[in-house]
Image (cartoon, rainbow, N blue to C red; front, side, top):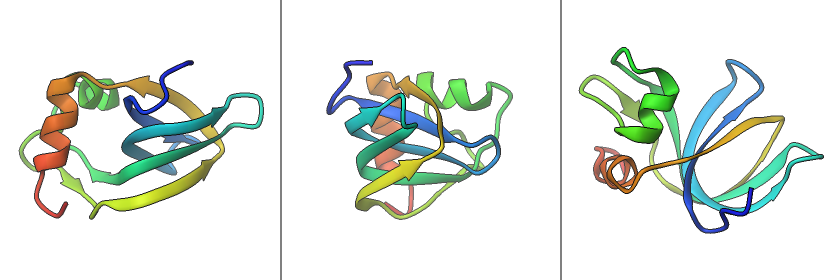
Length: 96
């Protein structure tokens, strides 16, 4: 995926984490990526699943962590582009 600096949601090793961020680097073979402006999805509500987070953003009842400047994630399972609407909503979410 050539989506550097694009807003994405990354999932790591099933059940270990879902993260919003801007993709800085991605090594698909090593399953490692670096995200900037990163926020962890602590809990999400709604029936659209994590791909709904990519398209629509968090819904009422969801919880996101505070924003970190940069993190390297290992055991990457998927890198998913976010819509501008979803990225904007995640950035405005309480706790940023």
